[in-house]
Image (cartoon, rainbow, N blue to C red; front, top):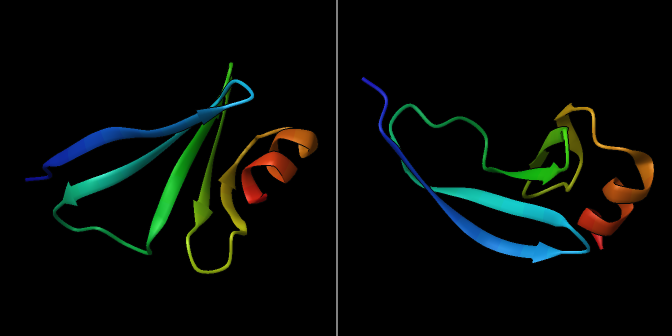
Length: 64
């Protein structure tokens, strides 16, 4: 059984950043970036996009 709780961490330039605070079977430490219809997952340690389709400019803003 998976259980998770999302909390909105930050919204900047229209990009919503979300993190899991509690999740069973959680993988690599990461956060989610949502920009309109685009979604991406970034590793916390490396700030590299693990998966998703976030436009380049939005990726730069997330990494900043």
